[in-house]
Length: 363
Image (cartoon, rainbow, N blue to C red; front, side, top):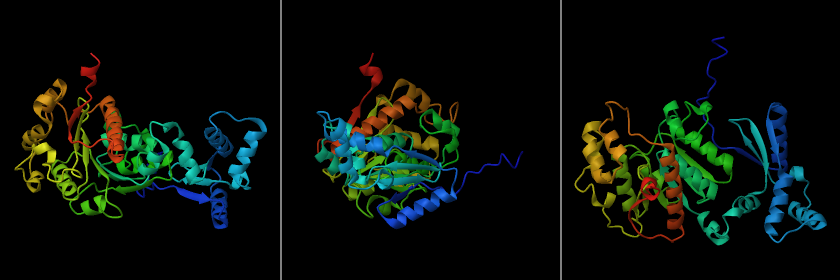
């Protein structure tokens, strides 16, 4: 029994699905081999419903009967439904899904964004790159951006693995315990949209990989900071400022969001000037009690909620770490994704600290 119940969780954590375009003969052979070699594979084939929905979305005034069939045939372009589109294989859960070709898939998946996000705006967003460090609030922002398709590429950095206590605020199944946060998040992103580009940095953001994360293969259009490391928070901003990358940060308390438009204000002091004179290189050597005054400089004690103030005094005493609630984290996901979109579309151009305090708004 002990051997039967031994964990089979692999240390080789895959997160990129395999895509099979059956217009290519070699892809057809590879897919056939996959299915033959894997008789227990789970198949989801709703391609005809997707094609029907695509046609109906292109004819909002209504279409039915022979006209509907004729329009569906035009989408297939003489290809059989079985060989049309793309088959996507997710190795980590042994699922095979049949979906529309890339352009049709993106068109239909974002159809109900219109016209809160126009087609032209959606196309502009598809070229944007967003980097996220820290995957508690960061996971919520990443998944909200994915659902809206608020960018074309996401870079994720976090060195931690999922633990049971994370599940008070991170939406993930129990079988992901022990899986790196970057892998679990990347998988969920690509389960929603396999055509998004995702890069993972499983060692977290460090001085050594900062250039790769922010600049290589295209400069970030936005840096989202949700990490815990005080030294990295400051170093990341210094690097972003030097390279004129805007930074946003949600604190999951009172819906507080910081926006630093280093792209428009390259001389702007980091953290709105709240950490002037602090040497980021020395912060990693500080104990947690020694870091608290710096954290309070950044957050502003008077701007914290009463429960956050009382909790801060109890960290490493009666509680193990800074508390976060799912309601605050999910709110932060919405705020962060919304502001990111408006920055990328040049609809929001200012820096500052903003509050979406639900207890203040809904009394």
